[in-house]
Length: 177
Image (tube, rainbow, N blue to C red; front, side, top):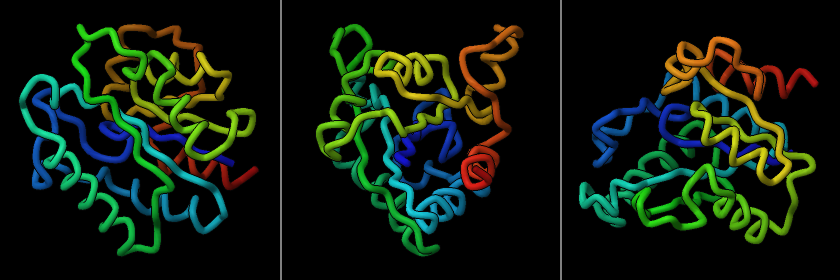
């Protein structure tokens, strides 16, 4: 199965001030271990993430690469890996096709991995993640970490996707199947 993860709020602690440096990137407890468990069970795992901080001038692509190097190194240290990282560097006003909820990043994943989304799951903490998944026929799950709690407070009758406490709980459900 292909597991597609949003980054901020799913794998690492999110910040309304953006994650601009490797020092600001802190994994959510258990998230890296959850990815490693998926790897060990034979699942492919990729990250898709909006990174408008680049267009806003808050950090550059080199800083983003350093953040991703930290994430992948910490993951490697516990026996895990990612099969790809895909990001949108554009500002919301740019109207690109790769900024979630638009499905451009999902199309990039499909092309890079030569796959479709019939046996895939997108895990996100925001409605745009869920909408992005649904736009390409992918199943989705919402986690309460990151922006997930705020979303459910605003939308108490949420029914677009199953809700889980965090990525570890999603992985428990996947591995129990």
